[in-house]
Image (tube, rainbow, N blue to C red):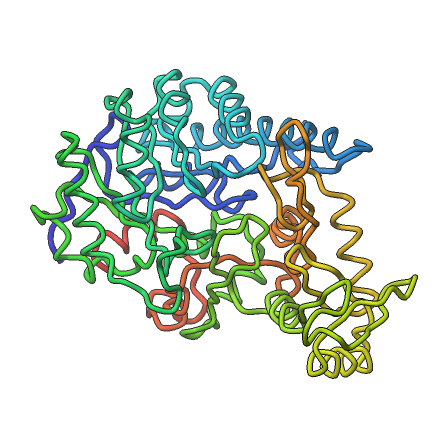
Length: 465
C-alpha cells in the first residue's frame, strides 16, 4: 500500500478520506465530527436532519398543516433547524481538526432555501457543501456567497462539463473538488442516465480519467477528484494514488461508516449489515424521485417489486385487443384489458389483491385493500419533501402539482427513511446501502460482530484495509 499523503480540501490539509453524506439523519453531527477529528472530512446530512429539545431528546418531525403547502413549510423549518443543530455538534466534536461538510440533494424540497438557512445559521461551522441528485447549477453561487467550498456530485464527464459551462466557471476559486459517484455501485440515489444500462456496469477508471481530462480543459489540474461508490479497501485503489492520469484524488466512504459506534442507525440495522451477501443490495427504480437507487433487499423492496409485477395496461373504451371488460373500484367502472391480462388480473383478485389502482401510464396495479388504503393515506398526507414527487404528484412550484396522476407504484420516501432512522423496524422500510456492503461479513476487521469507533475505522482504512 502506497503512503497516504495529505491533500488540501476546503482550505485545510487533511487525510484524503471523506465520509459520505447520507440523508434523513444517517450521517449526523456525531459521525461527521468524529470523522473530522480523525483528520479527514466529515459530512453530515442536511436532508431533514434531527434537532433536539432542551433535554437533548430528538424532536419528532410531526406535521400539523392542513394543506401540502403548509406541511411543506413545516418540513423546511425542521430541515433548517436540524441542519444548524448537526453543524454545531459536528464542529464541537471535531475540536478544530479536519473539515466539516454538509450534504444536500438538489431535488429535495426547497434545497436552496434549506442550504442557505443552514449556512446562515451555522456560519463559520461548515467548510464545504456536497450536492448531487440532479444538476445543481446554483450550488456554486450559493456556497461561494458564504465563503464555503462546493463539491458537485456527478457520474460522468459530460455532466460536469455542462455544470461548468453553465455556472461553475464563474466561481472557480470555491470549487473544492468534484465527486465522481459510481452509478452502479454507490448506495442511495444514483446518477444512471437513460443512455446507460443498469445491468452493464462500466469500470470507474476510464470514466474518471475522462472527468479529469475535462477538468484539465478548464484549468482544474489540481482540483481534487473524490472517488465515491464501491470503495472499501484502499489497497484496491493503489494504482489511483499519485497517478498522473487521475491527478489529485481522495476517497469517499458511504457504507463503511454505517457500522461505527457513532453511527446513529439502530443496532438492528447494524447487525443486518453483518449478514449481507453479494447481490443483497438491489439497484432499482422505485424511488418517487425518478432516479435509480440502491438499497438492501428486504420485505419493503420485495413488496414494491411484486406490486409492480401485478400490472396490466388498460383502455377506457374497447380498442383493438383491449376488448375484455373488467369492472374496478367502488363504482365498478368498466375498463378494457387484453384477454390474457384479464385472466391474470382475475387471478390476482382471487388471491386477495382486489384493489385496482390507476397509474400515470394507463396501467393498473393490483394490491390488497389494506395496502391500497395505506397508499392513498400516504399520498394524502404528503409533506412535500421533494421538488417533485411521482408518488403523490406534489411539486414545489406555484401549481403545487406535477400535473400527472399520483403513481401508486412508488412510495413516500420521507416516511420510510424517517421510520428506519428512528425505529428498529428494518424489514418494512427502505434501507439504503452501497453494493459493497457484503464486505462487512467477509472483512476480518468486523469479526465476532466488532463495531469500531470512527477513529478506529479511519485508522484501519489508512493502512489499506
